[in-house]
Image 1 (cartoon, rainbow, N blue to C red):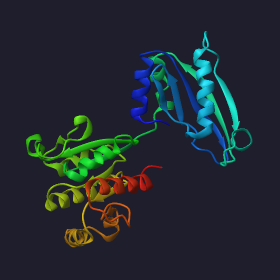
Image 2 (image 1 turned 30 degrees about the vertical axis):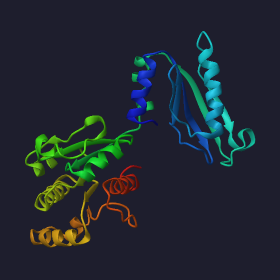
Image 3 (image 1 turned 90 degrees about the horizontal axis):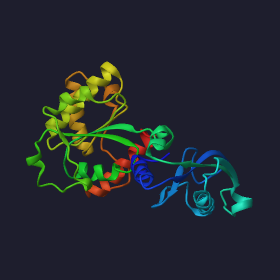
Image 4 (image 1 turned 135 degrees about the vertical axis):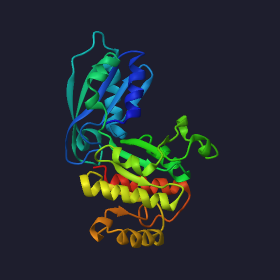
Length: 276
Protein backbone atom coordinates (compact mmCIF):
# COMPACT_ATOMS: atom_id res chain seq x y z
CA UNK A 1 0.00 0.00 0.00
CA UNK A 2 0.96 3.64 -0.18
CA UNK A 3 1.82 6.20 2.45
CA UNK A 4 -0.17 9.20 3.64
CA UNK A 5 2.09 11.31 1.43
CA UNK A 6 1.22 9.14 -1.59
CA UNK A 7 -2.46 9.47 -0.80
CA UNK A 8 -2.21 13.26 -0.51
CA UNK A 9 -0.40 13.38 -3.87
CA UNK A 10 -3.12 11.20 -5.39
CA UNK A 11 -5.87 13.53 -4.15
CA UNK A 12 -3.99 16.48 -5.64
CA UNK A 13 -3.84 14.62 -8.97
CA UNK A 14 -7.55 13.87 -8.88
CA UNK A 15 -8.39 17.54 -8.44
CA UNK A 16 -6.88 18.00 -11.91
CA UNK A 17 -8.55 15.04 -13.60
CA UNK A 18 -9.06 11.26 -13.60
CA UNK A 19 -6.19 8.83 -13.02
CA UNK A 20 -5.55 5.25 -13.98
CA UNK A 21 -5.01 3.28 -10.77
CA UNK A 22 -2.83 0.16 -11.00
CA UNK A 23 -2.44 -2.13 -8.01
CA UNK A 24 -0.89 -5.50 -7.24
CA UNK A 25 -3.76 -7.88 -6.47
CA UNK A 26 -1.95 -11.23 -6.48
CA UNK A 27 1.64 -12.47 -6.37
CA UNK A 28 3.11 -15.93 -6.88
CA UNK A 29 6.79 -16.50 -6.18
CA UNK A 30 9.35 -13.71 -6.08
CA UNK A 31 8.11 -10.26 -7.12
CA UNK A 32 9.19 -6.60 -6.85
CA UNK A 33 6.32 -5.55 -4.57
CA UNK A 34 3.68 -7.01 -2.29
CA UNK A 35 -0.09 -7.30 -2.73
CA UNK A 36 -1.63 -3.85 -2.17
CA UNK A 37 1.22 -1.85 -3.73
CA UNK A 38 -0.09 0.65 -6.28
CA UNK A 39 0.66 3.46 -8.67
CA UNK A 40 -1.59 6.07 -10.26
CA UNK A 41 -1.00 7.84 -13.57
CA UNK A 42 -2.76 11.13 -14.23
CA UNK A 43 -2.49 14.61 -15.68
CA UNK A 44 0.40 15.60 -13.40
CA UNK A 45 2.39 12.39 -13.81
CA UNK A 46 3.04 9.39 -11.58
CA UNK A 47 2.19 8.75 -7.93
CA UNK A 48 3.37 5.63 -6.12
CA UNK A 49 5.17 2.57 -7.46
CA UNK A 50 4.63 -1.14 -8.02
CA UNK A 51 8.36 -1.80 -7.88
CA UNK A 52 9.99 0.00 -10.79
CA UNK A 53 11.85 -1.86 -13.51
CA UNK A 54 10.33 -3.52 -16.57
CA UNK A 55 7.07 -4.52 -14.88
CA UNK A 56 6.30 -0.92 -13.97
CA UNK A 57 7.29 0.27 -17.44
CA UNK A 58 4.83 -2.17 -19.01
CA UNK A 59 2.14 -1.15 -16.51
CA UNK A 60 2.64 2.55 -17.30
CA UNK A 61 2.31 1.92 -21.03
CA UNK A 62 -0.99 0.11 -20.53
CA UNK A 63 -2.18 2.76 -18.06
CA UNK A 64 -1.42 5.52 -20.60
CA UNK A 65 -3.46 3.72 -23.27
CA UNK A 66 -6.37 3.26 -20.89
CA UNK A 67 -6.19 6.85 -19.69
CA UNK A 68 -6.45 8.11 -23.28
CA UNK A 69 -9.54 5.99 -23.97
CA UNK A 70 -12.96 7.63 -23.94
CA UNK A 71 -15.22 6.44 -22.44
CA UNK A 72 -13.23 4.97 -19.58
CA UNK A 73 -12.55 1.26 -20.11
CA UNK A 74 -13.87 -1.32 -17.68
CA UNK A 75 -11.52 -2.45 -14.90
CA UNK A 76 -9.29 -5.35 -15.90
CA UNK A 77 -6.77 -7.69 -14.27
CA UNK A 78 -3.64 -8.63 -16.26
CA UNK A 79 -1.23 -11.47 -15.48
CA UNK A 80 2.52 -10.79 -15.84
CA UNK A 81 4.96 -13.74 -15.71
CA UNK A 82 8.10 -11.85 -14.79
CA UNK A 83 10.65 -14.22 -16.30
CA UNK A 84 9.14 -15.45 -19.59
CA UNK A 85 7.32 -12.23 -20.54
CA UNK A 86 9.47 -9.46 -19.06
CA UNK A 87 12.94 -10.95 -18.75
CA UNK A 88 13.13 -10.24 -15.01
CA UNK A 89 15.14 -12.60 -12.84
CA UNK A 90 12.55 -12.59 -10.03
CA UNK A 91 10.84 -15.51 -11.75
CA UNK A 92 7.47 -14.95 -10.08
CA UNK A 93 4.07 -13.95 -11.43
CA UNK A 94 2.23 -10.69 -10.68
CA UNK A 95 -1.41 -9.83 -11.35
CA UNK A 96 -2.15 -6.12 -11.81
CA UNK A 97 -5.60 -4.57 -11.59
CA UNK A 98 -6.26 -1.51 -13.78
CA UNK A 99 -9.08 0.80 -12.77
CA UNK A 100 -10.13 4.41 -13.35
CA UNK A 101 -10.46 6.77 -10.39
CA UNK A 102 -12.47 9.81 -11.44
CA UNK A 103 -12.33 12.24 -8.53
CA UNK A 104 -11.11 12.75 -4.92
CA UNK A 105 -14.37 11.32 -3.54
CA UNK A 106 -13.71 8.03 -5.34
CA UNK A 107 -10.26 7.84 -3.74
CA UNK A 108 -11.61 8.69 -0.29
CA UNK A 109 -14.10 5.83 -0.64
CA UNK A 110 -11.19 3.43 -1.34
CA UNK A 111 -8.84 4.88 1.27
CA UNK A 112 -8.44 1.58 3.13
CA UNK A 113 -7.02 0.04 -0.07
CA UNK A 114 -4.70 2.97 -0.73
CA UNK A 115 -3.05 3.79 2.60
CA UNK A 116 -1.04 1.35 4.69
CA UNK A 117 -2.14 1.08 8.34
CA UNK A 118 0.00 3.36 10.49
CA UNK A 119 1.73 2.26 13.70
CA UNK A 120 1.16 4.76 16.54
CA UNK A 121 4.47 6.23 17.65
CA UNK A 122 5.07 8.62 20.54
CA UNK A 123 8.25 10.70 20.43
CA UNK A 124 8.95 12.37 23.77
CA UNK A 125 11.55 15.11 23.45
CA UNK A 126 12.28 17.88 20.97
CA UNK A 127 16.06 17.94 20.60
CA UNK A 128 18.37 17.40 17.64
CA UNK A 129 17.89 13.62 17.31
CA UNK A 130 14.13 13.93 17.77
CA UNK A 131 13.99 16.51 14.98
CA UNK A 132 16.02 14.31 12.67
CA UNK A 133 13.66 11.46 13.50
CA UNK A 134 10.59 13.49 12.59
CA UNK A 135 12.11 14.19 9.18
CA UNK A 136 13.07 10.52 8.68
CA UNK A 137 9.63 9.27 9.72
CA UNK A 138 7.66 11.62 7.46
CA UNK A 139 7.26 9.24 4.47
CA UNK A 140 6.89 6.09 6.60
CA UNK A 141 3.76 4.34 7.95
CA UNK A 142 3.86 5.72 11.49
CA UNK A 143 1.22 7.91 13.15
CA UNK A 144 3.41 10.30 15.13
CA UNK A 145 2.59 12.01 18.42
CA UNK A 146 5.43 14.42 19.24
CA UNK A 147 5.59 15.93 22.74
CA UNK A 148 8.00 18.06 24.76
CA UNK A 149 7.74 19.78 28.14
CA UNK A 150 9.42 22.98 26.98
CA UNK A 151 7.49 25.84 25.45
CA UNK A 152 8.04 26.83 21.79
CA UNK A 153 10.27 29.75 22.78
CA UNK A 154 12.68 27.38 24.51
CA UNK A 155 12.90 25.27 21.34
CA UNK A 156 13.27 28.18 18.94
CA UNK A 157 17.07 27.90 18.66
CA UNK A 158 16.94 24.31 17.42
CA UNK A 159 16.84 23.50 13.68
CA UNK A 160 13.49 23.71 11.96
CA UNK A 161 11.94 20.44 10.82
CA UNK A 162 10.84 20.26 7.19
CA UNK A 163 7.24 21.41 7.00
CA UNK A 164 7.66 23.58 10.07
CA UNK A 165 6.40 20.93 12.46
CA UNK A 166 7.02 21.48 16.19
CA UNK A 167 6.29 19.27 19.20
CA UNK A 168 3.15 19.84 21.20
CA UNK A 169 3.77 21.01 24.75
CA UNK A 170 2.90 18.52 27.50
CA UNK A 171 3.88 19.52 31.03
CA UNK A 172 4.47 17.39 33.05
CA UNK A 173 5.52 15.04 30.28
CA UNK A 174 5.37 11.74 32.24
CA UNK A 175 1.64 12.24 32.78
CA UNK A 176 1.09 12.27 28.99
CA UNK A 177 2.04 8.57 28.83
CA UNK A 178 -1.38 7.59 30.19
CA UNK A 179 -3.10 9.23 27.22
CA UNK A 180 -1.03 7.70 24.42
CA UNK A 181 -2.86 5.64 21.82
CA UNK A 182 -3.03 1.90 22.59
CA UNK A 183 -0.27 0.00 20.83
CA UNK A 184 2.08 2.98 20.72
CA UNK A 185 5.80 2.53 20.36
CA UNK A 186 7.49 5.07 22.64
CA UNK A 187 10.80 6.83 22.08
CA UNK A 188 12.20 8.73 25.08
CA UNK A 189 14.82 11.42 24.40
CA UNK A 190 14.21 14.51 26.50
CA UNK A 191 16.68 17.19 27.57
CA UNK A 192 17.08 15.81 31.15
CA UNK A 193 18.01 12.39 32.48
CA UNK A 194 15.73 12.72 35.50
CA UNK A 195 12.82 13.39 33.14
CA UNK A 196 13.78 10.42 30.98
CA UNK A 197 13.74 8.23 34.09
CA UNK A 198 10.32 9.48 35.16
CA UNK A 199 8.93 8.75 31.68
CA UNK A 200 10.42 5.25 31.70
CA UNK A 201 8.65 4.59 35.00
CA UNK A 202 5.38 5.93 33.58
CA UNK A 203 5.72 3.61 30.58
CA UNK A 204 6.51 0.60 32.78
CA UNK A 205 3.51 1.42 34.96
CA UNK A 206 1.25 1.53 31.92
CA UNK A 207 2.63 -1.80 30.69
CA UNK A 208 2.01 -3.29 34.13
CA UNK A 209 -1.59 -2.05 34.15
CA UNK A 210 -2.56 -2.30 30.49
CA UNK A 211 0.21 -4.15 28.60
CA UNK A 212 -0.34 -2.04 25.48
CA UNK A 213 3.03 -0.38 24.81
CA UNK A 214 4.91 -2.85 22.58
CA UNK A 215 8.17 -0.90 22.41
CA UNK A 216 9.84 1.45 24.90
CA UNK A 217 13.05 2.97 23.54
CA UNK A 218 15.40 5.14 25.60
CA UNK A 219 18.17 7.15 24.01
CA UNK A 220 21.52 6.96 25.78
CA UNK A 221 24.54 4.84 26.52
CA UNK A 222 24.79 1.46 28.20
CA UNK A 223 26.13 3.22 31.30
CA UNK A 224 23.05 5.47 31.41
CA UNK A 225 20.78 2.43 31.24
CA UNK A 226 22.81 0.59 33.92
CA UNK A 227 22.34 3.59 36.22
CA UNK A 228 18.61 3.71 35.46
CA UNK A 229 18.23 -0.01 36.11
CA UNK A 230 19.75 0.31 39.59
CA UNK A 231 17.30 3.07 40.46
CA UNK A 232 14.33 1.24 38.95
CA UNK A 233 15.11 -1.96 40.84
CA UNK A 234 15.29 0.11 44.03
CA UNK A 235 11.75 1.30 43.26
CA UNK A 236 10.48 -2.28 42.96
CA UNK A 237 10.59 -2.88 39.21
CA UNK A 238 11.24 -6.52 38.38
CA UNK A 239 13.96 -7.70 36.00
CA UNK A 240 11.47 -9.04 33.46
CA UNK A 241 9.73 -5.66 33.41
CA UNK A 242 13.00 -3.83 32.78
CA UNK A 243 13.65 -6.05 29.78
CA UNK A 244 10.82 -4.21 28.00
CA UNK A 245 13.08 -1.15 27.66
CA UNK A 246 15.48 -0.91 24.71
CA UNK A 247 18.60 1.13 25.47
CA UNK A 248 20.82 2.08 23.71
CA UNK A 249 18.52 2.80 20.77
CA UNK A 250 19.36 1.92 17.18
CA UNK A 251 20.78 -1.02 15.29
CA UNK A 252 23.97 -2.56 16.70
CA UNK A 253 27.03 -1.77 14.62
CA UNK A 254 25.94 1.70 13.53
CA UNK A 255 28.22 3.88 15.64
CA UNK A 256 27.77 7.35 14.19
CA UNK A 257 26.32 9.88 16.62
CA UNK A 258 25.27 12.57 14.15
CA UNK A 259 21.52 13.19 14.59
CA UNK A 260 20.64 12.07 11.06
CA UNK A 261 22.70 8.87 11.42
CA UNK A 262 21.11 8.08 14.77
CA UNK A 263 17.66 8.79 13.33
CA UNK A 264 18.24 6.41 10.42
CA UNK A 265 19.43 3.68 12.80
CA UNK A 266 16.43 4.12 15.13
CA UNK A 267 13.94 4.13 12.26
CA UNK A 268 15.47 0.90 10.90
CA UNK A 269 15.11 -0.65 14.37
CA UNK A 270 11.45 0.39 14.51
CA UNK A 271 10.79 -1.14 11.10
CA UNK A 272 12.37 -4.39 12.32
CA UNK A 273 10.53 -4.58 15.62
CA UNK A 274 7.13 -2.86 15.48
CA UNK A 275 6.22 -2.51 11.80
CA UNK A 276 5.38 -5.89 10.35
